[in-house]
Length: 264
Image 1: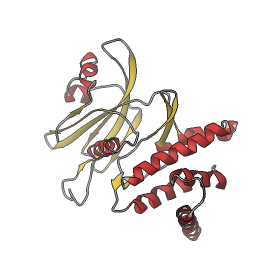
Image 2: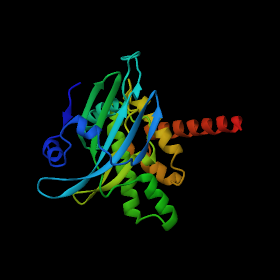
Image 3: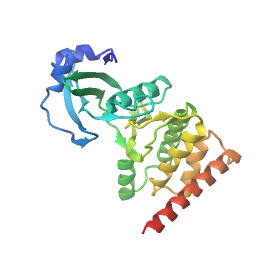
Image 4: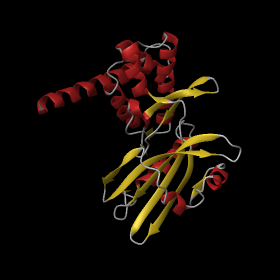
């Protein structure tokens, strides 16, 4: 697979001595998250502040991994790096207009018997996860009603666009939904797309992701959950489609609770 560079990466990389795979790999800048030791290899994330040729600075995240592969029907024996799958998913969402991270650089190398991969993305400066926002609101109270309703509607709209293209995020959790501001308006971005995949039908993606989101947002009222589904289905009133989704989510939630009770 060919190396990928965003348009502004070469100048940024040259200005910060990041203009080769080897120079990025050799960085000794500590870990933003401790490396995962699994799948026969390791994978870690570092944060670095870089300076552009014009003098302004910003943060970037550098993800490095070695022999950290995933296997599928398309690559059942050798596998592919989890960063390659994440990069491909990021590009897939970008192509269909689903807002996510901005990839600056991606590359892979084989070194002796080791397979290495690097994925660099721009930091989401000024953004916070929905999980952190909800924790703050539980402590200090919800924001103004208009802001809260807009948050619900924008998250639902991003999920709707993703699912209309039959893409399942596969880990649709509040900690993977980031809220910020872009050009004076609220902006929503999805992160952690390593497990995302296309499904045969929109309904498959919808059920999996919305079930996860429904179970992992305990602080949202039934009224606001209905408001979310209205926005998700782009409807002003409850209709048969919304009732069907509501009933399906309730049934899945009930089943999960029964299974949990039986295991205890």
